[in-house]
Length: 210
Image (cartoon, rainbow, N blue to C red; front, side):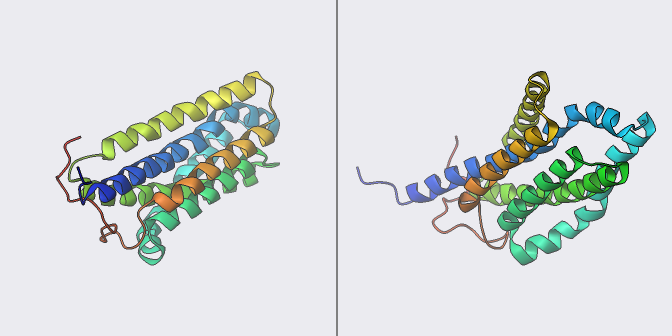
């Protein structure tokens, strides 16, 4: 039997779904690798509970301030490029935060990490929603579940590194390289171009029921 003319589009959509899932997993794992290290950072920098709380709050402040810029960046560069670039920035500032020699540097690094995380979050969801339109049914919940798997994976990686007495810089540096590599490998299979454009050869919406 000859292949269905839409089979190529379906295969492309499946690859895109795996790639977008990899980006969601990466986003969940990167910051989760840092969280179990915060008590150690608190001790090394001599932070009070309030100071540590302020440093962690700076992550959310960065996200709050940078989030509105995501739409303009995505329109200019497309969601695939933005998600990869800001994933790398997020990983970089997590490494800087882990190695910060002073509280102000910790706070600044977490602020910039939060900014990058917020933009990544918007970009990966834009890419996912574009693919969802091509599927013709909801897939976004499954991708958010993959994000949660990434967060659990990151936390377990950190717990294992702490138990094995792996230095923070090596642990977070290795995590950054690993997950930036995952995001880079996924990048060619993401949906590129304007958010309203259908991928070449994309399958017809609503055709699939699986």
